[in-house]
Amino acid sequence: MLNESQILAALRDCFDPEMKVNLVDLGLIYAVETGADPDSAPAWPRQWVKVTLTLPKPESHGNGLVLEQVSNRLAGIPEISRVDVKLVWEPPWTPRLITEEGRRQLGLQAGLVSISSAKAT
Figure 1: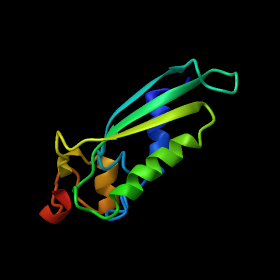
Figure 2 (figure 1 turned 90 degrees about the vertical axis):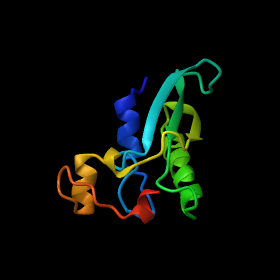
Figure 3 (figure 1 turned 120 degrees about the horizontal axis):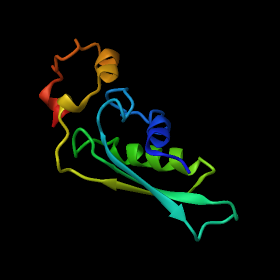
């Protein structure tokens, strides 16, 4: 069975279309749940995955693309039989959720968050 860290590693291939940083390092992935899927086919044990995520701003045109990226990336993993992507707006995303690696990719100083409010809302 895949664990949460393996799922998060796969999700590092999914990027926010505006900030060009992966969803994990932007702090957009809030939760990953997995479980055995007894109804899956073929016969080897496979699992379902549920990803709860948010996005930097509700009105972005790229939001549908992000959800599709997550679903498609995980659906391409043979051990996964079913993917559920849940978009939430609470708690709201803030730049404080960006990892140190994400800050490095964005050119921000460690510990200093200075993304424009247009991208943070």
